[in-house]
Length: 155
Image (cartoon, rainbow, N blue to C red; front, side, top):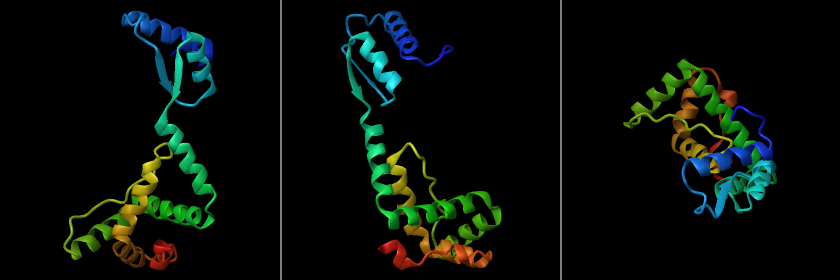
C-alpha cells in the first residue's frame, strides 16, 4: 500500500482486490493479524473477521515465556550463543569441526524468529542436540563464560 495503513485505507484496498478478482459475492470472512487497524478494516467491510490463529498462538507463547523467569533467562543465553556462532566465523568453524569429530554431518544452530512461536522450540531443540559440540567449540575459542551447564538445559 502506498497510503497510510488506516482502517479506511486498508478497507478500500481490500475492496479493490475483492472487486479485481471478482469475489464480491464470495467473501464472507477474512483472516488477519490482531492489529486494530486490520480488525477495524474488516469490520468496515461488514464481513466476518477471524484473528490469525498462528499469530494469536505466538502471542500466548511469548506471554507465557515472560512468566517463566528461568526459561526466559535460559532462552536469552541460548539466543546469545546462537548469535555468537552466526557472527563468528572462527567459532562456526570450530562447531563444524566438533560435529565432524563426532561423525556427524554439521548442523547450524537455529535462529529464533520472534513472530514464529515454534522457532523458540526449534532453537532449544537444535541447541540440545549440539550442546556438547557447542560447549567444546566455545571453550576452544576462549568463550567458556558463554557455556551452559547441561543441568540448566534439562531443568
